[in-house]
Length: 178
Ligand SMILES: [Zn+2]
Ligand SMILES: [Zn+2]
Image (cartoon, rainbow, N blue to C red; front, side, top):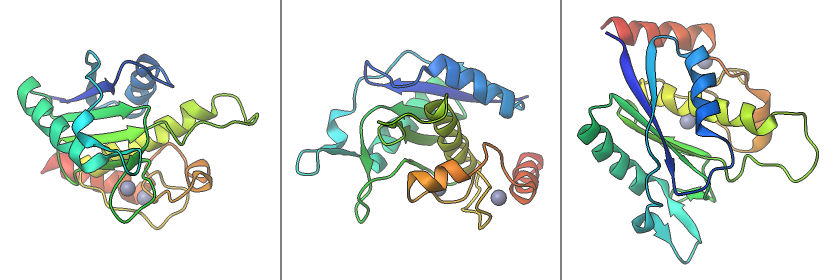
């Protein structure tokens, strides 16, 4: 039986359509049943007013409960607001590794200048696949073109492909067989 991955928009607005993201993820993660949930309210309890950002680890706790209560194997939250973890200026996303909850933010994936078409879409897919990889137990990969390479800045994200490298792909398959 295939595992369920539930996508859920956080808050009432989105920079990139969750339907489009779901469609693109389903082309890449063919072993997963991808569903879209109704948007959840912006998680106010994760807001840090001194930083004007949201603490992503607190959002993960909420999404874990949500996964549990809805019976989803994995939940990916998609936020339009800025995320952080203590000790870093911002994060593009965070995930339990391995686990049932992950979150990405499109806040820093947007560009103000003219970039190639679909840049926001490509970046969103990469960050989503990256955090899904963590939920499946993958750690960061040293290959700069692998989607599991750590993105410290947008240039890292733009350099990566939307896929796992062959080594990461093998690891994911091993996890599935276990
Ligand atoms: Zn990561
Ligand atoms: Zn890799």
